[in-house]
Image (cartoon, rainbow, N blue to C red; front, side, top):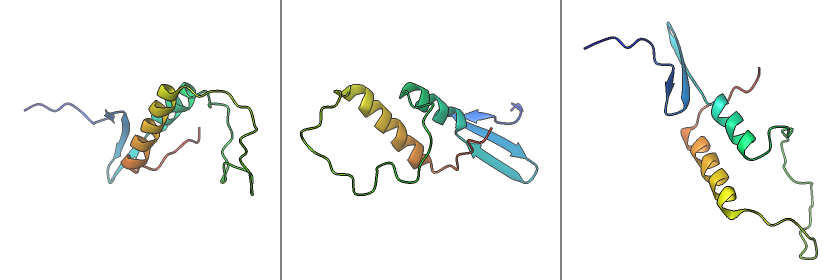
Length: 90
């Protein structure tokens, strides 16, 4: 058996180890996901839609690439199911 040193990454999850603590982060995963979805310049908000927003069929909007949309949703589901705290401060 050999010592492979401290674990720093596992399945894309960043691992930070100290004497009495292990911190798991996914900052790079989140930043890469934001970049892939073209949202790296977006500002965070507590409510993503306006209050009392009304959807109407008369509004024209761009068609969405369904494959890219599904990929983003799957990535977000992975992020949620790993249940890690995200530290996005730089």
